Image (tube, rainbow, N blue to C red; front, side):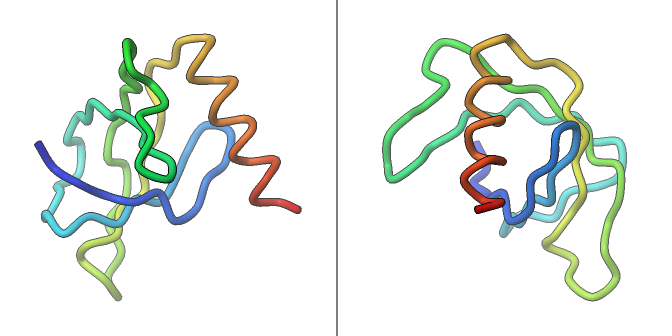
Length: 84
């Protein structure tokens, strides 16, 4: 299991910071924690690493590949809160 942090979020992509080095095309299976509370307890969010950044090797761009309706609702709320 790896840990990471979503540092930028859009509808279909996000920037992820992880202490682990991720490679292009890595497939990820994510669970969201917000304030130490597990948000997606029964469902995973699936994503793929689509870009690495030269300035910081621990930050990657991911594209969501499979989202449940519940996960979509959670991400939409996070996008709305971050845009305020």
